[in-house]
Amino acid sequence: MRTLFLKFCEYVFPERIEHRIVRNLNLDDLLFYLCPTIRDNTVSLLPFSEPIVRAVVHEAKFQHNEKAWELLGEVLAQYLKHNEKDILLLPIPLSAKRQRERKYNQVEEITRCANRLLPHLKVSTHTLFRKRDTVPQTTLKRKERLTNVKDAFGIRDGNSITNRNIIVLDDVSTTGATLSAARRALEKHHPTNITLLSLAR
Image (cartoon, rainbow, N blue to C red; front, side):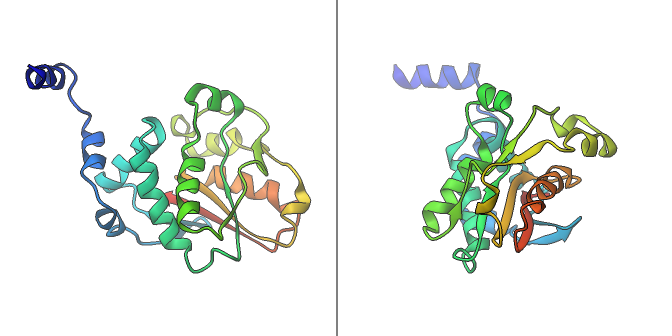
């Protein structure tokens, strides 16, 4: 009886294709695509054009998929493992409004997964914050994206980043506008170095 009920539920509520991809995915499958590239002063780890990568990112971003967070966290840890003691990692924050609506920040969750694998990695989820809500970048053209995030970020406790090697992390970068806006806010406090990093592009 239970089997019939489950089959009925699967028929009425079919599993999302992207959810099925992530459910069947293992780390080696995703690491196959790990190929850091640099464009617009941003290091990107995975090609967003690949359906598997796109599925993992979408599940992490929009579906609260913990396995997707863990997989991307492991990819991030793989990239950072030789430098974990020398950097301060800052995930791109959501606005307060977006955080309330979504109930989570996928970049922070991915960072936490990486941090569990790299216990010496220093992470701050409060140093960088959004001063105002912004329109989702995916809905805008390139010039509009630059304007949308201009002066959108602020810094708490600027002394904590002075003379530090900073990595700013976002999940997806298209034009690099969001990460560049975050860098401009950080530069006012004179860190030694700022690296812009996206999981996919």
